[in-house]
Each structure stands twice: as C-alpha cells, then as structure tokens.
Image (cartoon, rainbow, N blue to C red):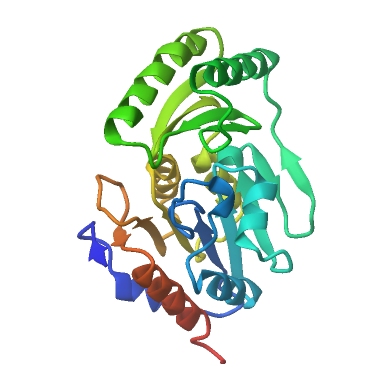
Length: 274
C-alpha cells in the first residue's frame, strides 16, 4: 500500500465512526480491480476471497455496494456471482443501471452512434477475424483486445484498429479510448464519473465514500468524486499491479492489499455495536 496524496490520512479515513445513521458507499470497478485480467473475458472471476468480503459488506446495515464497470450489467453480475446480495450495478461506462430489486435503467443511444458502432464492429471483424476473445461488442461501444499477443503483434493490431476507427469519430459522438490490453470506440456523453455523480446526488455529506478502480476509465470516477467537496470522508483508490499516474489517494497491489482493504472496511463498518 502506498499513499499517493500527502493530504490523505488512511487511518483517519478508515476510523470514521460507523453506524446505520452514517451511510457508507463503496464503489468498485470489476476487471483489473476485483478480478485479474485474463485473455478469455468470460473467465474473469474475482480474486479468491473477494466474493465473501463484498457480500458481507453489502449485507451489513449502513453499507451500499455498487459495481461500476465497462461491461454490460448482466455480464458483470454473472461474473461476480453474488445474485442474492443487495448490490447495484452500473455497466457500459455509466449507460446501464441494474438496481438490487432487479429494475434496469438505460440511457438511449443516438441512431447515428448506433450505426457507426455497427460499422466499427464489421470493420474490426474484417481486419482481425471473428475471434471472440479479440472483439467485444457492448451496448454503447466496441472494443478490440490484444492481451496475450506478442508485443509487436499487439502494436500492429492497435495501429490497424486506430486507423480504421478514427474516421468514425468525425461523423458521430464517438471517441477512442485505449485501456489495459485493448482499444475501445465508445459513445460520448456518459462515463463512470456520471455514475458516481448520480449515486452521490442525494447522499448526505457525512457519507463515507470510496471508489476503487484500476485503469484510465476509472480516472473519470476519481475526478467526479474530487469535484464533490461536501464529502469530507472520501477515498479514491488505485488497484493494480503497477503504479501509474493517477488522481487516486492510495495505491493497492492486488490481491493481498485489496483483501486487506476490504477487511479494514468491514472492521470499520462493524466498529459500533458488533
């Protein structure tokens, strides 16, 4: 564990009084944070010990647990494997929402963006073939992966996809984003930061808030949390094997330090009356 900002006091944050009248909101990215990256995306199960801890936090009074992912909500819910836990899911970088009671919400995508994303998927298939591990089609984006490829092959794939996708960003509200092991053509207008703002829009200022994430898409969430100064007990936590430039307060190396964080959060929650 490494403190990244001099004004962040980890012990003070974790020792904030915990009781049902003081809510706690724990927001978690999935891939790269709760689960390691793997070449086959449908095999990205959580680190050992994560499920049990997340479930216990979610069922403890005063806690609210939200998973915020680039995956579709149904997909990340299935991978996490806690269907009975009262967990809320945001998917597709803030375009989809699945509430604990099963109610789903989604934000509409424009026709032009939808058509361009369909074209992008066809062009990528033509360029790299129909490898299901390489091409990922989401509700509001298309991604091409190169995790596991030799470095030169990965570089060539990235350059090729950037070349064929970049013209599509000129005719619709789409933007290119690179991530750890791939590139994504994504609809503009929403990101993980929007999910954070929505979740905190009616939360009382005494709420203890944390967001844990690993890649550049999580920086939008970190920034959104920093833009809400009324929440004085808050933490932006970077979870990844290697440190990178980030707006986070704290860096955790998974899985051990991640599990230690979750254990400490549970201890904080149980501090009063357990």
